[in-house]
Image 1 (cartoon, one colour):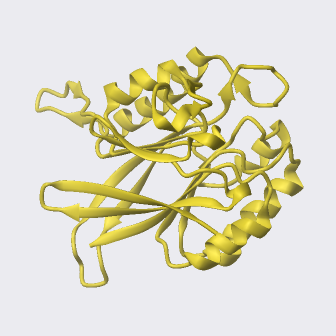
Image 2 (cartoon, rainbow, N blue to C red; image 1 turned 180 degrees about the horizontal axis):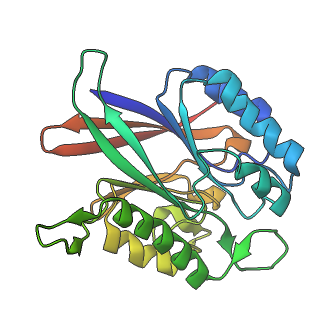
Image 3 (cartoon, one colour; image 1 turned 90 degrees about the horizontal axis):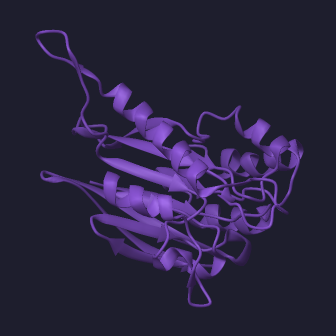
Length: 251
């Protein structure tokens, strides 16, 4: 059974375009938003955007992080939402039907913000801080999967399957490419190959709209909602594990 999701990024407060995308894809099971929910907005602006999801896709689970254009005030509002993934691990079940088919629990981790560049946007951090934030989220997944051996010693299994949601893309991917320059996070690039998640969904670089495989990971930059771009994503539960495929879409 294939579960359908939306991958979105860089809404920048454009609730008109967001609404059209959600209306066209109202039956998805979940939605991933890779930051820049607002465009330097306050709490009321953050509330307006999130209310569009609640109104038009009430049955879809929302997962999101903030972007470099999301202010401290907006992030304070985000923190009230259970799908806000900043340096957190959330679990979500893939598959399953009313007839009792088996589900697979997926761990989803997130880290928002843009790389420190000009300092003119409100949520910019150094590359090493981005890495530490994502590592904290990953450690939360590992803690959740802690097992006890017969001798009561703690062991940890890798949190798989795993989905990573960031605003900044990993470096040296199509997702971070602007004018033939790679502008993503070097630390994220290293963690991509260390964690080998099923999916890495990101945004920030509007020109980096792309879908590509990096090793075992499908990396998706759906492009900015503010320009009518998004991606549709399918996750299929197979006997050998989960598989994913995606396609870019535009209004």
